[in-house]
Length: 420
Length: 218
Image (cartoon, rainbow over the protein chains, first blue to last red):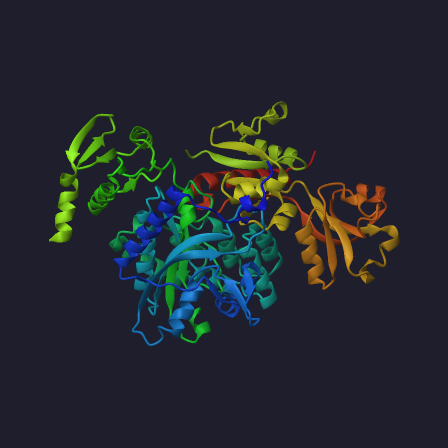
């Protein structure tokens, strides 16, 4: 089938129908509502930023995956690919004089350039939190606990948070005792998760054997024994410090009620130029990609002129939705209201009164016959169909039975409320 | 519930991949030969195999439709997918090379931009970029060695095993871009959410490979 351009949307973008939009709002609202109780307040930043701001935050390599635009004056703009950098900019400028720590949340669409056909979205919703101005383990425990609660709030079934620490990899890399060019190769191979290439490279170098063993064992350093195993494999000061930090976090997460959903996982590899401490990802067995990612990034704000530590996470809302199993319940309004000739204004007043009682009400706007309206409404799941006829209202129930009530009985209470 | 899915590439690596799974005790010897099914159950009920086109293989693993996969390093280099590459399975050795017709084999470096036909546009582009040589890539899906003969390209970047195809088409290798073998790859979430089941497969296949390379070749 040939589709004309006007029938299509750009590759990697999506239209959301009412049911889907409602779920997105529910998930976003659920997360924001949950973190609000922790004192996190939502901020909004523009969808467009200066390219310079985004590159300053994420490094020049990020420029390759941005949608760019040229402003009238020739300034380069880009659509934000994530919201942490814009929040960092906001914090370092307009919130500079504010008392720390700052607890901020955000929700919005982000954009990443992807090759067409990669089945990856180029625009998707993110919701996240940042805790700025506290470099403590308590701050990390708060963020990880909120990540767990955020996923609970979304209603996604089974999930777990894998918690690692970039200090572990940093320590291992530093302890390898390799010159910088080779170290750069090691980092590149780690990013590519190419453990075959890593093994080959390390075998040809004279690197410290215990650190080599620990690096190659990385994919298995997860689960209850990971910390012990890590300490055994690489007995270096940095590694000991990380193990201690994670053990302390574990105790705090037990107290905060999050530990059951958390697994220590030293194999988490996230950008270690950007992250400076804990790193974590949220997974669910039914989905091959992470639902959430985050960690400590103490150096980002430096790039914007303030040296505040920070920690945070972001949830991939569309992934949470695609991890859901089963169909959503069909939606229908609580009632539809039709009217006979001459009762139009009475019908509007009736609908208004019902809405004031928190019911969802749709008024017939196509002038169709009562029986058609009522049958169609009940077929798609509406609880009651109402026909306003002068001072009386015919109510048809789901089972087809009809009874008549006085319009005053329906409009009355709400009317009283508004007049009293 | 804990059944693990392994994606196997049809084509060049199929035979070796099946032999590896047989050596790991996951498939009965030769069981895959008599069937045209694209999903094969393993003998002990812990795994199932999904047979995919090589070019699609990493997509299955990256998106988690398969927990593990067997892929050529050439494909891994070209597609740069987000998967964990854990074991060199040792079979399917080949090399990615740059080749030109005999009469251009000495002079190709002086031509700019070069037109190169290949099934590996990104690897090729990276190679020339890193050397500051401008290049026009012509992406093809097969019979790459024909391109220089009919004037479609100056040279080719392709996989070679024996070099016979090159010789038959009067092409001369001028540079090697990579060496490739089959690799065992794992989805990043499976590695965590099904850690034990995935680790069991990885270790069994690693052991099978070790045994094969240790055994004297008959």
